[in-house]
Length: 180
Image (cartoon, rainbow, N blue to C red; front, side, top):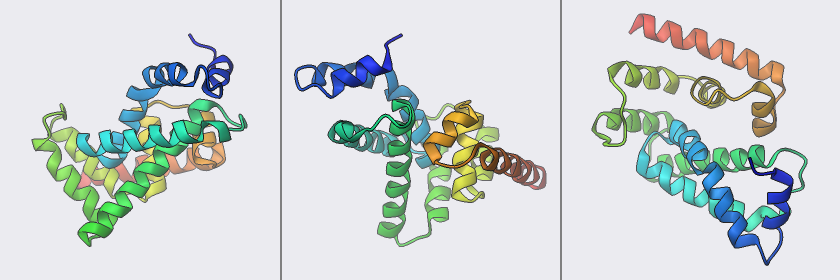
């Protein structure tokens, strides 16, 4: 396991930045990809957002103050990039964010990178009915198994509020799946 402090020092050093960034990519690209994919749904969109997130991370690493874990800071960037991407896509298509998400879910069946079945598509449809914050909390807890403490740093929300959001999200998803 690579020490985050040491990696951060290398990332901020001009002599080691490129090599350290390759290490950072290897450590986090898959986790960030799936985090982004849970938000934007499409593999191609997730790849684009992931690339944008890593560009932003590379350009802004010197501004990282260390007030949170590097992992949390990167997740926050990936989350914000995903939300910005979804908002821009909705605006470009002149539809609501909910409609963009429903289009993405409808396209999951034809997505060669989606290995799920009808039940998983139904779950994604249920998640799409939640408010954005509850979607994020549910995805981070259910799919990524993140601890509330880490989610709190990423989303800049109290652990108690996150636990309540997750509980409410679960109830709404259960109701959706039972009714549909």
